[in-house]
Length: 114
Length: 262
Image (cartoon, rainbow over all chains, first blue to last red; front, side, top):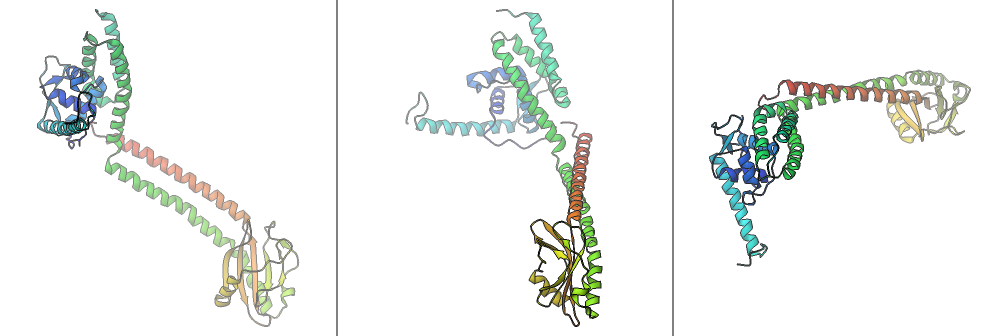
């Protein structure tokens, strides 16, 4: 598949959740969906169509790739690329700056002006 | 709570059927993996089906639309294809305009022919010494209603001497700008609008000799206007038909040359 250009941040919630899930290691589709559903994984309710559509575009953009190994031919495993890793880092820094700002303004439930 | 294998199998088959709605390349690439992911979710005891099934339905709607749009974009939004279509649209537009403008000009020029002859004859008679009142034929032509050609003679200042034409019972006066032009050039052919809704194909010529002045020959353009309207409709239909062909051709070309990885 043709490689595209890396997406500019902010990333879509689905792409962010997939990158975050794969940062932990190689995973198959349902494992990524489960991670994304958890609050710490982004809290994204994603179905198979959205998941594989996003993975398809992310592979074109060079953010993830298939590992080529599988315990079952119907299960495909995906891995974060170096570009995917750096895009995730940029997004996390952006979110961290926003959260810090929200802390400073006392907008977070357990936060306060620091 | 245990889950019925038959219900799981039914849902699995339904989802496999729903996968047929995705574009073929996407389905071939991810159909098996999507089915497996769906099955994994159904078998996950921690995931309530009441939550998952509506989620899958919403996901089907949104991702089907997204993948079909992506396929259309990859198939048809290629610069070469778009440029080709734009060029063809441009050519079609120029052809449609030519279909309208060229016959329109031919029609308009042809409309003047009888008046040129009538004005020429009247000018010649007056220049031969016949008085304008005698040279202008008897009879009245009501400009607002009649399609008949008419003639009129005017003096040097543009005052009517004799006229067949009547507009609301009066002999029409010529626009002053026309007289200046004819004094310099000898003749003018123009579309005259003496009143709202009346268009006359007019020819004005300079008269020399013992009765210097001007002669006017005119004819209502009502029938020409109807022909022009028909011409516009035909050119418009031809343009729409050509755009339709360009659209169909672009769709066929885009489909035949679509990227196979789409």
